[in-house]
Image 1 (cartoon, rainbow, N blue to C red):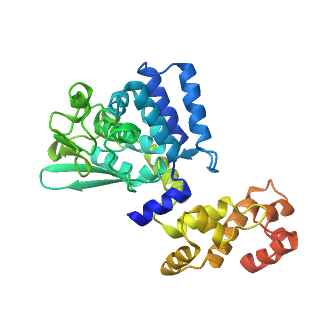
Image 2 (cartoon, helix red, strand yellow; image 1 turned 90 degrees about the vertical axis):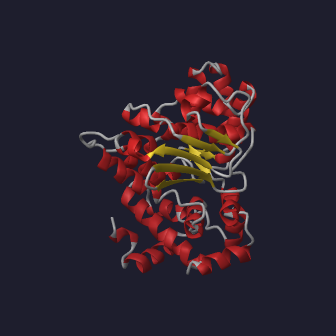
Length: 348
């Protein structure tokens, strides 16, 4: 767990910009902020995501800053739960779409667990079923997984409240947890929206974030006919997962960093190690444990990127060479022959 957090800090673990907009929309609908305040909050998020180079995503640091600002405006972390009823499924992007098109409630939660990384890279959701209960556990990789108050606690309450509302959102069925464990301090008032979302058996300051539903009630929630959109949503989500490597997948993390830094000249192992908050020796050791070397991984990323750019058709060969980090087109040509058996001109 510590290793995963160390990597995530260096790599600026990310969330979707859809999630940010969904939170701002909920805050607006709840009357917490006006349009001027939304613009200021959006600018603050953007400023804190300047190092993020992936389109449609912002840094997790920016998300937590946003929740800190909202908690300050509202007077505490309870705001996370208070805004959840105003959220739409679109705030979670493809994760929300997968849930609302799932064939059953169990299927919805399983898809959320499978695809949640697309919305927030450092989040893990587990589903545990026994004879009587259906439990959903929410975890954030890292030492800040169980904040007691403030913006991080508001973010966790928001996420878990949205999980508790899945039956109603996805199937129109009001089904609340029979018990809930919320690893934050109890807000000043634990009634009202807290009880309405999480039920009456709520424990605060626990070791985990955990929602427990009655298994029979969960199994009773389904649709008569599966959505025809679901196969397309699954296909899209599974393709997208390959572009968002798990932050505890060292090979995927390094490959993503290399890809982002190729243009104009390939990054060195020292540069990638620094970006990930690791020593060069530690990075090389972890890659070796995974059976890879930095040089081989760099070559694999270049080859995969070359295939994409050549298939795109918008770039000439000199531009592709630059995007792959080659100083000369001839060097790219030799690499293409080694990879594909023919020069770039033989591929188009």
